Image (cartoon, rainbow, N blue to C red; front, side, top):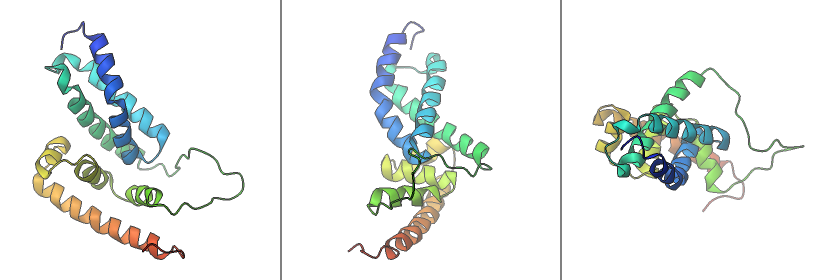
Length: 169
């Protein structure tokens, strides 16, 4: 891409924002961090635009940058125990027993690499080879992390379902 393609980049960034945001939300677990992650990934992608050969590759480059930035930010924030919420409850929290919150909560218990593997493999529907390439690891690592993550998710989700008196059938 040439240096004069700012408008092209802006158009592509606007088009890929929703996809990147959904991925970031699954990785982060909240809206504020997801928006920050997408902004950071797009900023890094913009800064590296001279290395991107064609405008059609921006989405793939930004997605890889998003995953890498997410994993490095998880490492930095490992010590932080506060979890931001979208709305502060006034009196009590009403539990939502739909599957979305349960899955997001279960995802938050995974290690950053396991979470990235699950999002790449099952949300973005990438194969083992593509996932390994994006994460910069061996295919065997992707397979083992997937197995560990799915085992942990099954345990978490069974506990969540067992604790719901109304029951899931």
